[in-house]
Image 1 (cartoon, helix red, strand yellow):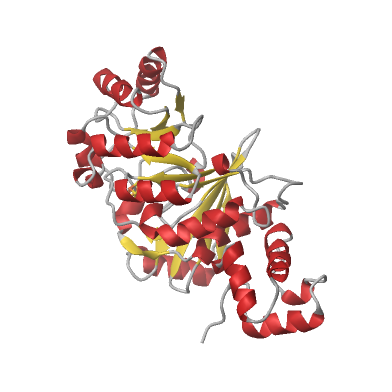
Image 2: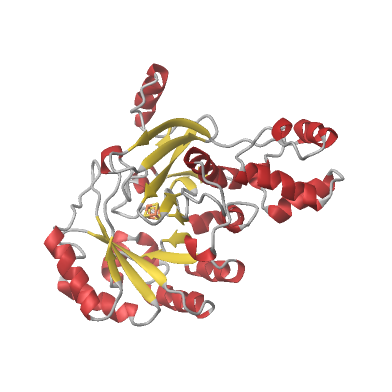
Length: 368
Ligand code: SF4
């Protein structure tokens, strides 16, 4: 039987696990610090843990991060990892450095079943949920690469659950991983620096509101039900009015915080002035800001990116109405790491399998 992987536990879970082998809670805290502050995975290197306990831990549990299969850096500094999860699946995590912060985009599922029409990940379908270890492992791999030390040398300042998958459909594992991201013994990030992005699973937004204080982002992409149902099929089940109401409830519990609404700009689809005006009416109902995302085309898509002047005009209509609106800069284009391009590799399900394996065997660094 596989040993428990300590990356699968948050602080309380680790303490419970240590209690089950007769160890005190502070021992779990010590080990957690070694894992997340010093990036140590070998118990033998945990020098302030007694030798007998180190041997006991080595025999009974393990600390195994995801395997880096490839990594690649864009000319703009964006860094992408292809991480092996179980020998047959791989997912991508992307680090985006900016002047005052460094943001890691993390995946929650292999593939995604929600079928948003403009999304590259959707084209591969859903394969499986990631474990807690696989989610927090993405942050760990990036933090180790960056030499990030919580509270001292903080290079990784923000985590966004905006990679592959719908995080709220993998609720327990995502909430546990986000707990480690925010724990002082983990990555020590403030609540507002951890963002969960959802396509709009209304009941789960309410559930999240009861268990977590992270920032919320909603993939809106359309300002009316007819268009949104076409772009985000989940809208049929949870239409905009219900979604906005759940956002109001989420915001009500967190004074002074706003909800981010993501809006991918699709040429001649959702980028007209009338769409901006409809969006303004929605945004007046909840403390909000809007992120306009220039669409990143991928093979086989029927959409194209809105022209730059159209995006700016759309932004101006929102700004003139007092809606805080940003246009997201496109990053990592040259390594397919831009928003909506986190496709990953599902070796047993896609036509890319043969190609990927061939590249893997040849050790080509550009296989990602
Ligand atoms: S946009 Fe998000 S929720 Fe929609 S299909 Fe893509 S990964 Fe899934």
